[in-house]
Image (cartoon, rainbow over all chains, first blue to last red; front, side, top):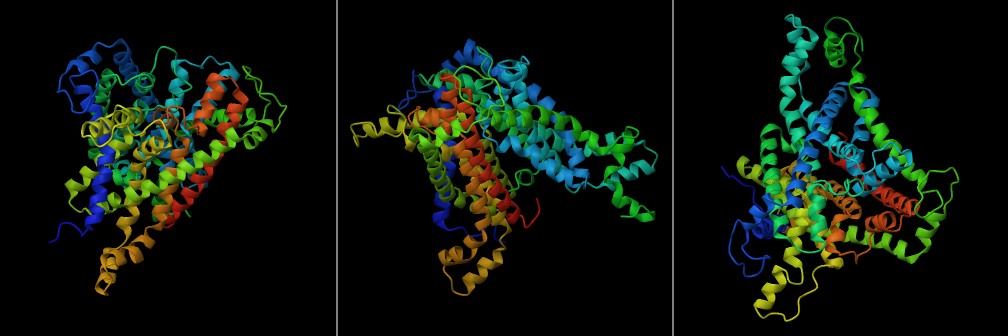
Length: 267
Length: 304
């Protein structure tokens, strides 16, 4: 049996070019972080771990990495709880309100990040509720942009969920809460985990929404890299990038084991 | 729907969770998220739009009821602003076109790859490149395309050029950067629709004597139009919204809407005017997203 459908050579060539364009910048960051010289030059000067070591001891980038990690962890926690509860409603309710709400919850993703950040910033300043340029204020922005990913992933994983399983447990004497916890929650757990992973990655790499909300002197990693990139190509920043790339690649592989990526991204 | 006998199961959706908490109603589950979005999304967004109709007073940001169209009049009459609207839109269109030309073949290849392992690998490559922090990817592109970057130093080293080519800190650099970040979205928008085109349609065209190129142009391409439209609009919306790509790849020389917003707020303290530019950007991308949504519904044959 034929394994692949025939694809014209021109298409194959362009597809390869596109893959190169997608992956080349990533490869270059890895090389820049592992190179031995002061800058990544052509021809390269050889490999070394000096920039990785520099990153691990860097006050700027290591603390930014940890800050981003904590921020992503907390916003993931909040948006996973909010998003999963909302998804239970969205996937079970047949009302028109549910359909409208589903669209409403996706809005923060389609809104330009700069506009969302600015709207929150102006809101914090005009209402004077003490959130402008604070961790809590930044966290709120990150929950808004990560929650849609949790909702999309969890509702996708609940498509085709057989409610009769829960009913079977009920008819065998389980209380509704027990039936929900032991049957439904277990079955949708992979979806929730994948949603949480997506939320984490989105928050960890978030730049646009962060722009107006950062706490002075406590920049998340993308912001710290952006600031350093305006002046020079610090290899230490590239070394920080290597750790971020590893985190994203690992998360994507894990989430692909948990849910059908096609279904979530409607591909 | 009647709640009698065997029909009960059909009505079940709202049931189990609801009963679990004793008199719990299903919509209570959505309440925390809804209130959060109401307070921190809808209200701030409406205030942003409202404040854009206030008179600009540098350094002052308080919402008043004295609404005026001054800010918008300024945006649409001063060439520095309306030309940046046109520049944003122009860049968005060019990026969408290039992303389509580069993205379609990859989407086609992934859609036609039946080997599960290879298919998953390709999907993971596309998805991780989509999810990776944009600043990191711009770092890579800047090391590649700068005046002393890899491309220029390799060309000079090989003796092909003497002066570095201006690849970055101009519109060309911004377009390359935006194509890099938006390509995965284009590919993902196309895979589904290409996969849905039954292979026998292409085979039928071939067996009736069409060349591969003809079969593609007359059968596959027209059938992928909804996906092409959806992907292009998505890429367009993402391109005009991006701040970080024009800031880094354009070096503040390519004035697009998000850069104006940042400058008005952070440098001039002209909050109301910045809000008005943000409103223009918001409405432009909303129109693109709305048409995208219609196209996506059309793509999935009415399923949302």
